[in-house]
Image 1 (spheres, rainbow, N blue to C red):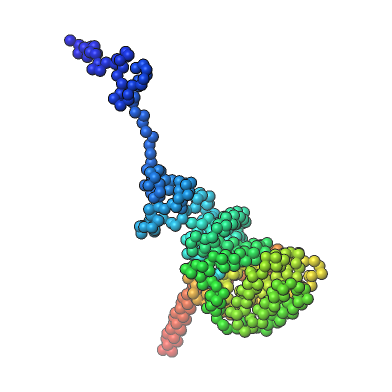
Image 2 (cartoon, rainbow, N blue to C red):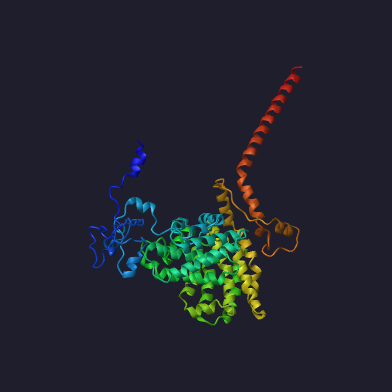
Length: 513
C-alpha cells in the first residue's frame, strides 16, 4: 500500500469551514449584523527592530522614549523644556575621564591633510607664540585642547603655515584658509560666555595665535594691532575670573617678572657706534612732535622716547616699556584706535615706522637667548616699514628718511653685538647634534658677492642665510675638526720623535766609526 498517497488523501485535522458558521476569535465578539463581518484570526505583524538607548538621559528613561544621546541636551528635553541630565554627569568612572574628551573631537577630521600635520608639528616645535616669554610648556598644554575647539586648531595650523612661509615655503593659501576658518568659528564662540576655564584658555590662545600669525604677514600690521586689542578684551572679560587658567600669570606684573628672569636688570652694553645710533633715533623721533595732534599720538611718542632713555639703564625695563605702547592702544576708545591705524593718518604712520624699528632692534638685543623666538619678525617688520613709507605723501618723507635708511644697518650692527657673540659661543658649547633648517638663497648671495643689484628682500648677505649657514656648519664640525687636528698632531709628534731617534742613532754610529 502506498503510504504517501494515503497520507495525502487523509483530510486535515482542522478543515476550514467557509460557510456562514465561520469560527470567530475568542477575544473578538461578533458585530451586530451578519456573521460574515466577523474577523478571522490574523497572523501577527512583525515588529520593527528597536535599538535601545543605554546611555540616555534620566527624563527619556522615565518617559520610556528613545533618547538621541546628544550632548549637552537631547532633542526631547529641548523640545519640551526639561533640564537634560545624563547618568554620567555626576558620577563618571576614572576610565571614562581619561579616555573620553570633555567635548567631541573635530566634527570634520577628514579635512586635515598631511600638510596640516606638518603645520601642527611646526607649531609645537617652533612657531608657537613667543609670549609668555620662555613658557613653551603652556602652549604644549594649549595644543592638547585643540581637539575640542575648532577655532583653536585652525588658528594653530594657520600660524604654523605662515611661520613656515617666512622661511621660504609657499603656504600662503593654506595659511589664509585656516585663518579665515578660525576667525569664523571664533566669532561664533564669542557670542556666548565661556562655559569653562578650558574654553576661556582656548579662546585667548586662538586670538594670540591669530595675532602672531599677523606678525608673519607682510601686510598684517593693522591686523596685528587689532588682534592684540582683541587679546586684551578677552583677557579682561573672561580670563580674570578663571583663577586656574593657564594664562593666570600672564598679567602686567607677571609679564614684568618673566622679562626680568629672562633678561636681568643689567643695562645694555652698547658700543660707541650704537650709542650714536640711539642718539640719532631720538633726534628723528623728536622731530615728529609738531605732527602729533591727538592725545593717543602724543602719549605714543612720549612712550617711544622713554624706551630709548630707559634702554641705557636696564634692558628689562626698556623691553617692558613696549607693553606700555600696546596698553595705550588697548585702552583707547574704538574711535581713537581706528583713527590711529588709519592709513590716512600720516603722523601715526610715521610713529609706527619708528616704533617698529626700535621694538625689533631693542627687543632682539635685550632678550638674549629668548630673542631668537622673535627673530622671524625681522622680514615682516621691514615689510611693514616699507608699506607705511610707500603710503606717505612726498612732504612727509623727510620724517622717515633716517629710520628707512637704518632699517637694515641697525639690525646688522646689533647682530655683531659682543653680548650676542658670547651667546653664540655658549650655544656652540652646548650643541646637542640637532639639525637646524636654514632658508638660503644662493642666487641672492651670488649677486651680492658680485656687486650686482640686490634682490627685493635680500638687501645684504645676512638676509640670504648663507652667512648663518656657514657659521652653523663651523659650529657643528668644530669638535670633529679638533679631534682630527689632535690626531694629526699626535702622528706628527711620533714622526718627529722617530726622525730624532734615527738621527741620534746615526750620529752615535758615525762617532764610533
